[in-house]
Length: 262
Image (cartoon, rainbow, N blue to C red; front, side, top):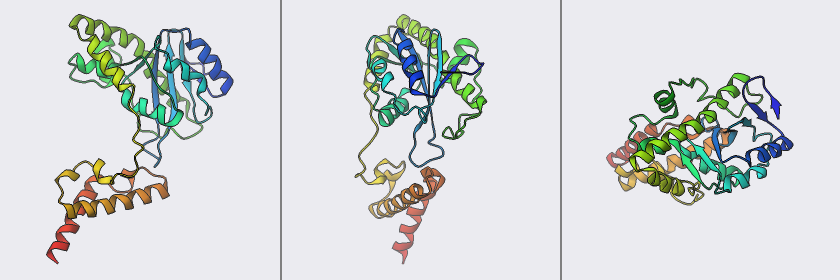
């Protein structure tokens, strides 16, 4: 566990991770956040895991500590509440990359929606509840780069530490409104989501806007989507950096119109 001089520590080796697991094992509530590299690579991966408890605020580097088995029992324990904000992506990513399953999840973004908040992003909710302003300038940076600049790591460490007091406040409001059990039911369902591993479906089935195309245009779109995926994999770039979705949709419609006019 490496001291940083800030209010967090960096976990970049297996022994430090085991020490962390023993410490967190005594906690009843743990805040969790992730940083990934989906903006920069074809096959996205989790690049940082931030965890916070009463006297714990750590940033785990899973690109250096590839074995996260010491943390698996904590995520599975039903008597330890894991706090996320917008958990869907995080739950899928933890399962995909580390085979981590989660029990007793509480999603503060979901709770905010059940409370009727007009803005439910973490930045907006924290400003509303605590007057805290988060600096999101690193949100779209490449988290897979190593070494990471210290200011990027410090940025990542901030979000998780706010999740615990935020969850307390939101649960209190939900109890007053009689909606806490609703959120808990939805969180139980959310904890079971898994990444889509079915690679046999046509790509257009998961493409926004494909539903308005006729069969010929769908066939053209599918070929374009297959081509985009091949290029993206070869160049190790995300799909949108090869061709934008709107451009592909327009191209499929235009190509079909040209063929019909010929």
